[in-house]
Length: 443
Ligand code: CMC
Image (spheres, rainbow, N blue to C red):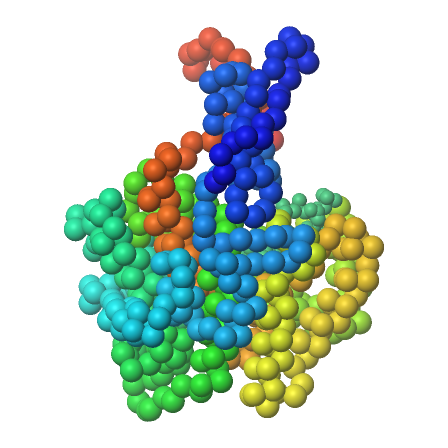
């Protein structure tokens, strides 16, 4: 950050008192007002539900310009990475700050590959879950359980320990994810294979069965790899902020990543890809689109067009553009000339983008709008869609967690509040209380 030469002045209109706060500039993007001294000097907090105007940290990992539809990791445009790179390279980029040279890449891939196996005892965690558990519930549980395997040996202030923990997470999450699926199917777990790439290995562990050989289709593996790249990191979103907040207390990183998975699960975040496919199935045919668009615009109806809108992107989501292209490529490669859900999605996008409501509110398809159609073509079950997002985002979470721990200004995260509850009351013994809680009586 640059030296703070710019300042802003805050004036209390009642007392006329003024305070000056430094304005900090990053390498690009909007300036930020440094309000760290605000409470100490004014006795006031800021109020920003949903953190719509709050920068919570300094970061050099990912840059987003929501108005221009730009997403860059360590300076590289997402379109270039999706087209020319692969997920292992992007993972290295996020973790280490630049693209690897050939020996660095080979070593990184080999190190990740050599951490893909799970401790045998982890098998028994699965049998504690109902077979019909949502796989994201299994992910939260099993990734959290990894903290019990790697706790006493892990010093988060030691950069080498942190990197080993990071490699373990990136390497083991696909195994945990594929086994969640196998468990739901009642099939034996398939162990990772070191000869396969990251994406191939995931597909192998998902779809191979012990009774026959399974050959990974390279087209499908490439599609999964690209989807992983598109989801790898996204600045200070809800799940990443959850990981950072959990980690700010110096908690075990495996437990922190489990908290990120929990946050990702919601339909407003990573759960949207599952919700999009369910929505498209519910709509069914093009003639019913106007009915759903009408519902999405109705203030009294909680229904939202899933896969539309974004807190940051107000022009287009660059990931969605690549995703739509990938969707066509995958369907072409698989010889699927007619995918009714893709036709439906494209028609929905066309209608929404011509509608004043979506234009005025700057609502565009986001990364989740087309990804489900690709997953469906790859035979990935709907309940696994958000799990794939979690597999991809794990590297972003660990990169952000490492950056946070290394930041010398890092403190435990502790937002404040605007208290609107009751004032001091005298305690009344139970036998003397005539009225109870109005809220409980309503319920
Ligand atoms: N359908 C209909 N109306 C919408 C939608 C939508 N998908 N998204 C936002 N709006 C309206 C919303 O009702 C509000 O209207 P008003 O100003 O009249 O109250 C306005 O647009 C602004 O919405 P908001 O909820 O204040 O905006 P936000 O920045 O808090 O929410 C969002 C962003 C992504 C949660 C939201 O757009 C949404 O719920 N979209 C659907 C779920 C979805 O696709 N999520 C995936 C996000 S991308 C992947 C990821 O980050 O995980």
